[in-house]
Image 1 (cartoon, rainbow, N blue to C red):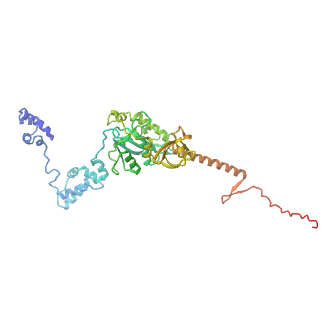
Image 2 (image 1 turned 45 degrees about the vertical axis):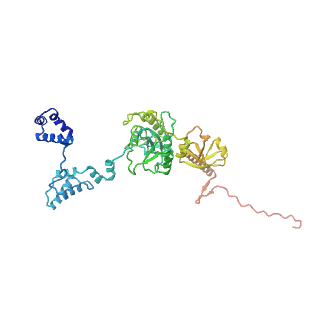
Image 3 (image 1 turned 90 degrees about the horizontal axis):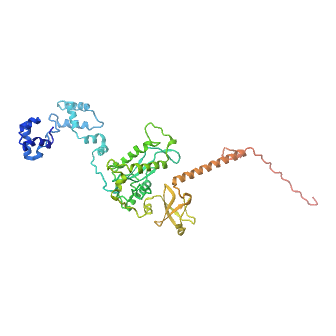
Length: 478
């Protein structure tokens, strides 16, 4: 009570300013007269500093407990696994008896342990990681304007989707978020493990302008903050950032600090979107395969959630909607010179090919463009987006040449996985037809397989060997 220096000053202020006697103040506040006199003396000498409560010089010291025994009690409190206060008290009294010291009470032991720094107890009993997460001093990066800092991360979503083989699989989501506005600049959905390819495709969408008018977030960021995953630390991503003049910042290994904004977004997706969709993972809940969404169907749900809900709802911290905060004060992003230049940097799926007289062949498809006529016979490199192989980008001597179109897929968006799946399915169907036809032939001819695996006729009539007929001699004297 009355420990604060300003509180003490307010109590004695009437004595200095209004001439109120010390005895009257003592009676009004029930404070001993000598205490008030000491306060007034200290205030005259040191001001408010003199009214601060003085720390006891013997605080934390125990006059009746030797230092050796005190350290023994503290050592027991820092042991793993954690010991109860009663156990520590019993062991301390055993040592006290050996040292011919007085026995120690339970409350004294409890007081000694409670005076230990909490950080010391956490470090001793829970380890470095918990200590660092709880007590380490953090430097949080806070962006001052849009596109100053982008964060990128992956998460395995708590939902099952149907893959191309009809099996339930949990998808991965790569997200790139603008630190200043909390707006989502780009994303990528996939079933495979995270790699540099998924990161590059998410960056491609994030940096380039979007076809959706309400999705304005784009441009080249000043900094990209990522963890130490192998996809983020790949040489390719480092070269991309160097070419775009983006500062690549890595979090400490195993310590993804200061990334709470993107983690909160993942929680928002989980709580506001996934929980109302079929396939959401909950405890003791069986997944019905028939009702699960495909990756394409789920992406439609995710995009609608981003553009119609998340981007338009005021954020709890900024008090502005992400899209309004990003475009505040007419912010103009810096864009690459062209999409082709961006593709040359980001699209890691590159294949060497040769231009034939009838076009470029890739994945059993043929791609054409009038520009190719002048380069027949030349070796080129094609780059493509695995999500859409309806067109490929052609590069000649590291320079963009043209976009070649597959006429069979014109006007459609078909992924490479769809084509491979369709191709395998077609081969499977053909093999089934071939097997049925062969089986029918074997049944009609009565061909039975032998032990060696070869077919032998079972009811075919064996032909007798032809009788050798001696040719007649027609000589006159025979």
